[in-house]
Length: 464
Ligand SMILES: [Fe+2]
Image 1 (cartoon, rainbow, N blue to C red):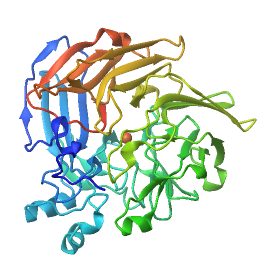
Image 2: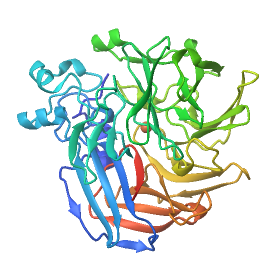
Image 3: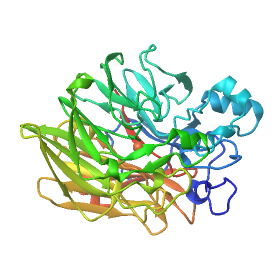
């Protein structure tokens, strides 16, 4: 059964996940330790933060997006947070209450609200990126929402009408070409659409990719010349959704495939490689090496528990996995890399789509869908070595975004940043770790004068 918002056992509105109710501006944050003097840019963390108490079931996928930002400027660091003002949230503000049903109870939304603001609230609560001079808040079931640099909502952005459906929250920006490569999936046909935007933000390539089933596809991987899609058996059942039943199922008999498409390829150019049945939420990176493609991702042997909309369950643990596709022989090899479970994988994005020596993953205490992360691990693929740091027993971390050192030379010249909150004191800080020495722990803590609820993705947007 779906967890009601007022259910005492609904973990998604309590503790460090409890929403905050104000928008703040706090200049001159207190820094403990030494902040890298060369860093200029914005650390962002998007996540669900319902403005109104949900009136039925509640899942973190439902919450209004709120971006928390730390601006690294000449005079120090300032904090600002803003709700993403979706059409759905504006309709709810007008009525002074929650109106949209949960992802598991979406049929409960009143018709007058649907007429005014659409069938589904595009809460844009998952990620925040910059491309083509625009700042975009993303959620995979809707179009991007453009915000200003200061987080004011501009509105939905559809690439001058060329974006024909939703857009993933995990586009890949090629640091060499400046292109942004992305896709959108849908429970209704066409199930998968693929796009490339050029460095100025104009869509220059679009293809409809044929896949047999409406599968959930949260992320993908991109190399210099190829785009990789994971067709895994996390399958939508739209008829069940309209009956008000759980609308997503694990159907392992359908198997898992990796599709390889040239970056500007058409649908008939995709090559599918069958792999052991599994699912992936996020990828670290992928690259070409001769006639091979190397792909790294935290991988679940079955369906991630967090994707069950009806109720949270203790999840299968994800472990880092490496696939190697041989494009000449048409074969694929795979191996588990480590027995330490982790998710929210990241790299130095200045090397995205190219070979990376280092992978960074966030470690977790347990895999209930409460984002109970408590550390970070660095993998050195050249030596096979690892470094890890685990936060204090009362501390919960999140995704660690990589902020490259503008004067850096080596791949790991930079810092890993995550918001960390204490369950006892209910205070939050930005943890800044030197990526060259992760095990040493934070070199700086930027104290945020408010608790930041646990959320989804973090990002570093360097001053351009
Ligand atoms: Fe994600």
